Image (cartoon, rainbow, N blue to C red; front, side, top):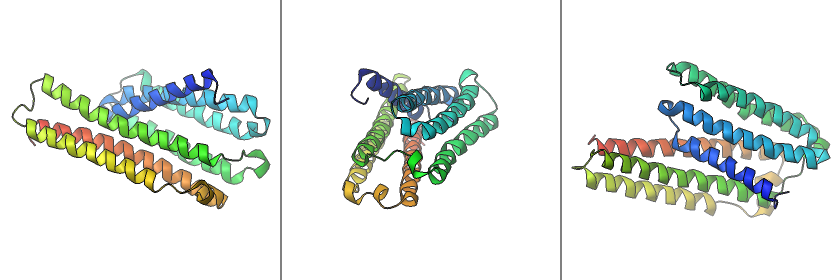
Length: 233
C-alpha cells in the first residue's frame, strides 16, 4: 500500500495542505487556512479509506476515524467557502473542530477492544512524525522569507535592512535548533513510549499534537518578528 503511486500522491496532497495551513496561520487569512485544512483532511480521509479497504481488522477503528474526519471537514468548509468578517465565529468553528480532532481519537483508542485496533509500526510512526516536523519547520523558513521579500518589494524596511537580516538569521537558527533538538531526543524503537502501555502511547500522541500547535505558533511569531523589524518597531 505505502509503496503505491496512489498512496504517494495522496500523501503529497496531505503535506501540501499542511504547508498551506502553516503559511496562512492567522485570522487575517482564515479562509486560506481553512482551505488548506480541508485539503489535508480530505487526503487523510483517502488514506484512512485505503486502510479500511485493505485491513479488515482495522475497519471498526477506521470507520470511527472517518466519521470524525468528515465532521471536521464540514466544520472547516464553513470557513473555507466564505470570507467571514466576524472573527469570533471563525474561532468558534475552529475550536469545535479542534476539540473533536483532539479527543475523539483518544476516546476511541481507550474504549475499543484490543482486537479492533491495529498494532503500530513504531519505526514507521517515528519517520512520519519526523517528516511532519520537518515540513512545519521548512514552512516557517519559507514563511519568513516570503514576508521579507514582500516588504522589500513594497519598499518597506529599507533603513532597517540590517535588522531584517538579523531577524532572519536568528529565525533560521531557531528553526535549526528546534530540528536538532527534536531528532536528538528520539529514542530507539525498542524504548519508545508506544511500547510501554496504551495510556502512555496515547499521551505520546497528545504531546505530538501539542508540538504541532507549538510549531505553528513559532511560524506565526517569526512572521510577526519580520513584520516588526520591517516597520522599525
